[in-house]
Length: 283
Image (cartoon, rainbow, N blue to C red; front, side, top):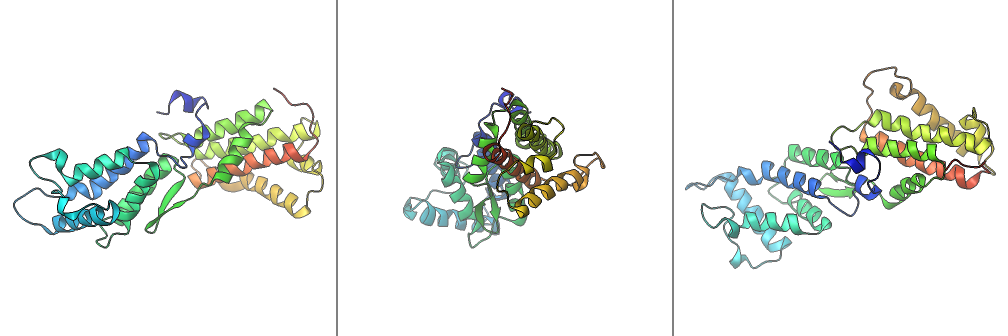
């Protein structure tokens, strides 16, 4: 269940889009995936198995190349004794104490290791965890890449500071639905995003029944191609999978769809606010 602050829209945007940070829940999820898919496969026994050999090889390379430690000081990965001195616990302690980017560095180092212990299933699980916790990054191939940059975050932040209450309320609702870690609602997040644009249109024209086209006419020096692009974007949300008209019960909307619409609509209401002569706003 989302936190009170998330349900009521008080969480900072940086927590909704986890950029340049990893919260405790995400860090734990990422570690658990490494544990299930790699570390737990190690067998403490009197026999030297192939999987043990591969994991020990990975740990040795991490110890040498990633941690830059003396190989002579490398402890056993796991044993029946002295658990805290095992290299497994050294790696775990590092992961939970390190800076956010160092945690991603470690995952990337494991991802690119020659033994390829990070399976396709594990990579998919990591990406699901990153998406669930609204991280700004994904594992693409063997590299962690940013999918939500500072400009996108700034666009949403600017939209959330819109002086009109209805516009802000729709954007805040869209963000809450997108960032709900337990039950995200991408379909209704998109509805709320475009509703923010609809709420902004009467402010531009002074007409409560004004359409997007009416509002665009009030924007000075708007290139026809840009006006057409905005109009088509609105049409997309009206028609795509029945998002706004309940044409189907379960449209194939995704996190990427909802995030794109939130960023785009946030930027658009800010654009209208700056570039058009609006009437008095509701505070």
